[in-house]
Image (tube, rainbow, N blue to C red; front, side, top):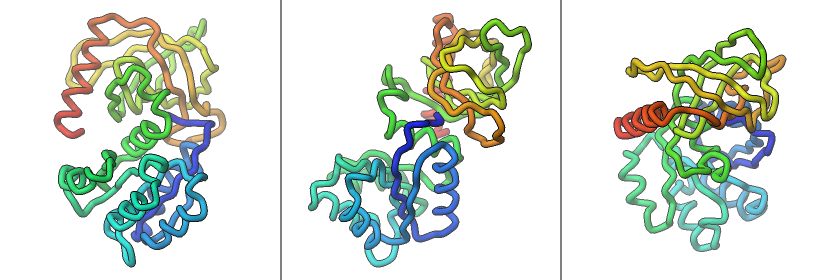
Amino acid sequence: MITKDHKNILLADDAAFFRNKLSAILTEVGHRVRSVVNGAEVIEELKARASETDLLVLDLQMPEIDGFGVIKWMRTNDLIGKVPVLIVTGAYDNKEVLKAVEPFSITEVMTKAFTPEQVVCRVNKILFESKVDIRNEERLPVSIPVDFVQGNEDNMQTGFILNIAAGGLFLHSRIELVQDSILKMRFSLPGVMNLIEALGVAQWGAGAAGTSGLFQGNGIIFRKISEGDKGLIKGFVKSKKRKGS
């Protein structure tokens, strides 16, 4: 999901490679990112600007004060729940991390072996829960080609689905979509023979005119799709989630 509703993200990681990679992804999709390199700097930022921080993306292994120390400080200072935390780590198994931070009511953990689509999907799920999970649906990052026609146009265009749920998808395209326009779409899920056809309406997004950004496009809400096709999507998402995709 690309957003015009910019959010302020504090990114904490001592590794320049991951700081730069995450910052580039999050900036491209419309967020404002400020970066720090250790837990002590996180704490100073939160002391000064907690009310201006919509999300903390936190590495666990950092010098001076590690991520666990930051979380403990946040609990002591009543910031847990007020500033959402997404832990991004390569040092621990996700289940191990979840168990360690369970007393702090933090459940969002992501491995550093991420794809850009996974980062955007997870971050925007936290920041825009009412938009992304309006029906409490599981959403899966993917890269699936899709053919579509906008409104009453005759020309078939091709784009890519970057994430999908039973209620809709995010469509990446070089074609700028008109807000609230109707799209006729057809695509196939990997490993599924059936061709899915659906009508959807273009919602949030930044359009695509004059840009080559990976995440340029629009969120599409399904308006007409068969129950059978919706069931295929649900099954596909659940199957991939179980396998950890």
